[in-house]
Length: 191
Image (cartoon, rainbow, N blue to C red; front, side, top):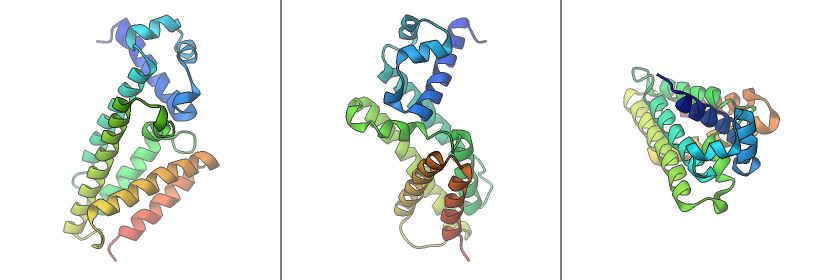
């Protein structure tokens, strides 16, 4: 059951996530967030003591989401699982109009508290470990070519993924993200 308090908290989180992904961390403040949610700015502090604490919650939710998405399609061959994961994350982020929460925060890295930087590093580790695991699965099932260590390939995929998100945001075309991800997947496919 959703109580009024949890309903307000969910509205704050959802609205803040959208602002973070479209305006970045320094691009919005608590007053704008309160106005969009339809509450007083002081009410935000009842749910989150600071903007940093709100960002910490957004990254925690992103970690849970990515970990869950990495577990999807467990019966698929490695290469298809990789393609489905990258497509799902891109679609759910809203590539072309938004960037991922971690990427939105990294742009402000030097101004973030150490605890938030550690949370972003944990999110990145989930991506990298999950991608390396999918690569290993694909190498075992014969759908992904062998070559560089899985960890290095995972970093290449992640860097390509983040770059494709930025490209799609700059062009406003989700198809640009899809095109880059298709090249990544095609280069890993065992022929």
